[in-house]
View 1: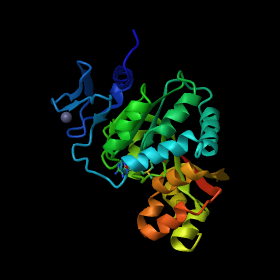
View 2: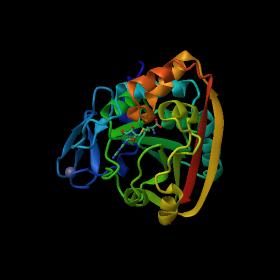
View 3: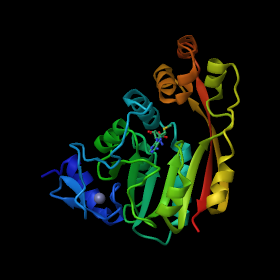
View 4: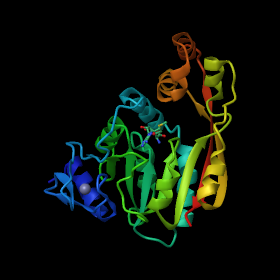
Length: 288
Ligand SMILES: C[S@@+](CC[C@H](N)C(=O)[O-])C[C@H]1O[C@@H](n2cnc3c(N)ncnc32)[C@H](O)[C@@H]1O
Ligand SMILES: [Zn+2]
């Protein structure tokens, strides 16, 4: 008999349950009756019908809503992030050539496509994965679309995991919490942060804000270097072809449109842009 998506997620939770810590008291957690996670002090967290768990008791609605995640999902299935993810896969294969059973966390996993894509291309003997995000909508979508991994509503500022739990931590276009990241990664664990670069979506920025350059908010390489060793960067830059559906999804998926007037959003939608520049830096560090 085919196993349900929820059970696939419960099995994935069981596989790495020794890594979890109760978000209230930090004690270890167990899966009970395939229905909930319970800690040694009896704090209890239900496994949802889609198979995700909310371990952020104070989770609140974020600006990242269902429509944004649907749009990101459309862009991802159409390969928007593929060149970036291919570079990440090559890096992971090189770094973990000799290793088995490595556990990867995607911190700020959104609707789950990145982690699911990475895991689908890497050997399942070598890697399993846990995606965490504060947005319930994102995590529920991930649990439904990508069963067989663990999807957790959690706050980056209070990650419900034991210290030294993870071999890899990826943090893609999401906020960082370096105190938690260095606590969570094993010694010699790999940290990969992806940040947008100066030309990211420059054609859209020109329409929305009449300037093409991104304003840099601090230097993320310095922040990574302050917490990790052997820091390197890899720039990934390419043009992504658009059609009208993809242009609309691109506009819906990016926080860039949040600050633009309705008029500017309309002119972006009717702009017939045939491609957009995608420009990222991967910042790679090792935990010491
Ligand atoms: C721009 S989205 C990127 C999501 C995904 N990595 C992607 O590239 O599609 C930023 C994500 O960070 C998440 N986020 C923001 N603050 C967070 C926090 N304190 N804890 C966990 N996730 C957070 C948001 O919910 C959102 O899903
Ligand atoms: Zn507890």
